Picture 1: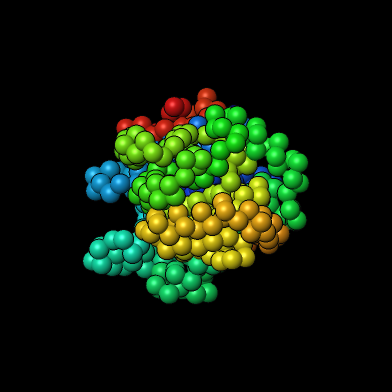
Picture 2 (picture 1 turned 90 degrees about the horizontal axis):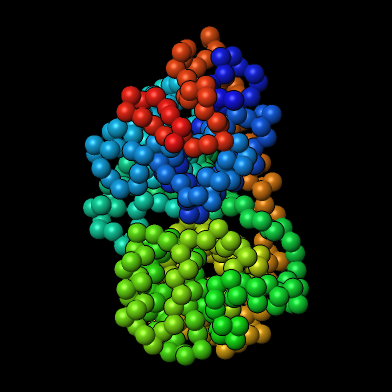
Length: 431
């Protein structure tokens, strides 16, 4: 089998999903959306700068073509970014795509530019959050907002993960209001109503704590996410210190560029017990180990982990940023605190630990309110609706667009279930 583009249209829409990194919440959201699409109606390809083994493995199992382009990466580097733009233009020109759907800031910028330059009929972008935030200098923030506004003019549909993100996009003028849509994250088990079975939860808690190596009798305050500036792991550690409780164990699941620094900080505070569990592919199975999920993020979109925790019956405390209040309603489905205030985070966590009846009520209400917004079916329907606008444009094309002849995306021997990597001559070889 090959990943060569079709030489003639077979009725399916050819969709390129471009994401900076196939990891973390944005990567998981992107891959879940692609995998949810009906292959009889869509022919998807994923283009990414890098990916974690778990998500690449999911793509491989589903025989989903993934093209790795190493020059596509998050840090700003003019030389690398120019190279990534050229590579993306080549890939999109070769593929004859009907739709290009971008995720994250870097892929969103370069992917949309490349799509427009290649005359791709329909461009969709998903905001999981924004490249600008209140912790930046005002000039830098203004530059990012200006860039996103210009990119918005190239975008046919702007999908926003959560109402809060959509409101910010509209308020900042990043997209025309009629082009903005709210989209949810897809979480296994979402759609279930009512409290988690107490006996089953107790068994799941025991298994999860054994898997983590955490004492069964400990009070566990957990967090899940990449160890990055955005997630403010130092505030999580400061909150644990402020708790001042010897029975508490803090657990952070996830790796990232700040892993070594956070580990050093944890070692320097021996009064606090902290387990840095690293990247794990079994996060939903580990969540029952937590008595409280505490998110200390400086900025967010709508973190998938919040919905996953609610599905698992874990009470949550999170910072009041972007779309987090979509699901964390203060005093009803969880507690909110300001970002950058670890002492307030500690007070909210302490309140839930000392008030188990309140914590249980919040967890039960949170699970009940999730409804069907965060199911795979809801995500699929939102994507199908977002892509449907291309159909009139395709019908009006004369002559119909076809992929560039003689420029395959991959050699005939390549396995479409395996990641591919760009080469120096812009060809593609199996990685």
